[in-house]
Image (cartoon, rainbow, N blue to C red; front, side, top):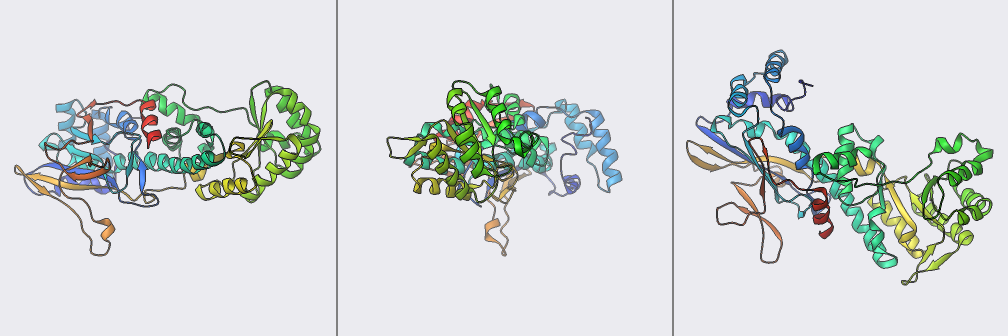
Length: 457
């Protein structure tokens, strides 16, 4: 749609800022960072998707005309001359240079992640103009990727203590597509989760990784029941709903998931799966993943594990923990980092390996985060006026945490291999590399490369 252009993908007040800079302004230099927040490090991700979606597409005359009409009706001025110059001089591509940290890198907070500067002195106003869309394109996928990554560390620690760490890729499943604010959020958040895991029901995330990061199919799922496909059979025929699922989707080496608490999860484990369907499960050769969906997550999952152990038995792994035969459990209700810890600890105390359980996470994975979760900000830190670079910064007396960085910046690794933000100069080995320059998308990264960096920490 012509209405959805980068020109109007901004805040209203940005429309008036082209005339607010000092006379003689030539270049405006800004940076993006996380100023701290919930975690002390983050998984940087999502910028390439933003660049491909928004910066790789030129503006048009129709978009300029529409924005001009809109601004006047909206009560704001419009820099028609500036946008017309971009269209006429650069065929509509934005004259900006964007540098960034490697996507997938795990970087401590309070470090520069992205820098942006205009490449044409006549477009000094453009750097801050794109803040709204650019910051949003970075903070959301980075925060979701970090949220997912931190849960991964909790689960991986439990697997190292009690089970098989090689199972980690399918231990946290994305259930979040219906719980986000838009399809674009599902795309960005869904592929951010896939940086760390391979299990998902958010198809949009897989398609995003294909479109923006040249991925193959990078997320996988299994046939699964929902409450409607259980309750449609009637309470008296609950066992028949499970039997049908097993007959249709069972088979040697296959997996299927069955939500089993539409009525009574303990009865389903004890009497239906554990007695009435026990032999059918064993003979099918499939692994049945039983899903509780209500109650206290830690106690319900542990109760289910105990019941299923009595009914199907288990083997003791080389770490001395039980691994259930024929069945597993997935908890998809009330999942966050705290409940994941609680479930894994409860199972461990009861003698069960983390191999037995997986987690499904929805809103808490993709939606229960915001820009302040990692205190993201984009700030101007340098400006060139009449040929002279000046440092720019804010330092509010009421909140030292909002103090911004000064000058042009670089991201380096010190002698100990730790990330550090320093003043830029030509002698510095800057980890930030060019990813966009005046219509040219540079240094494309693949989804496999992003995953590799994140897995190395």
